[in-house]
Amino acid sequence: MSADLLPRLAAPVWGAAWSAALTELELDVEQAEALLRADHVVATGPTAAVATWRPPLTLGPMPASLVTRAQAILGRQLDVARRTGEAANLSRRQAAAAEGMRSRPPAAPVYIDAEG
Image 1 (tube, rainbow, N blue to C red):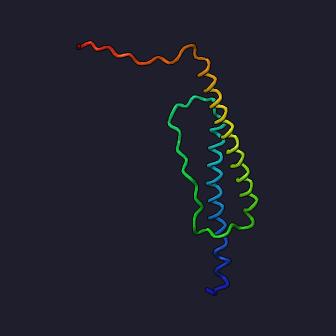
Image 2 (image 1 turned 90 degrees about the horizontal axis):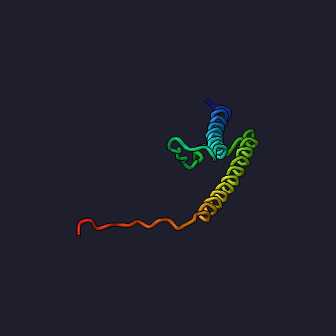
């Protein structure tokens, strides 16, 4: 096999690897968007822990054909980050308002010595 043929054979694998990495990112963004849409739904089970995404080290530079897709994913990620911050701020304000509506301070525990 000649050396000039190797780059042409590697290109489809390289593009497929980048495409798979972007798909993984899209799924993470979709999960975050779903959590934000369901912010008033009572959780019925454990919340899935989201692992930090790390790009595969062997991918090399992104193919030009995937740049537009990557930019769209980045835009969605930034939107989710903004909306998550807004939701956290709203949650803090609601907690403070609920605390302010208490008619009396929380009861302190009382212990009775029944033995002595």
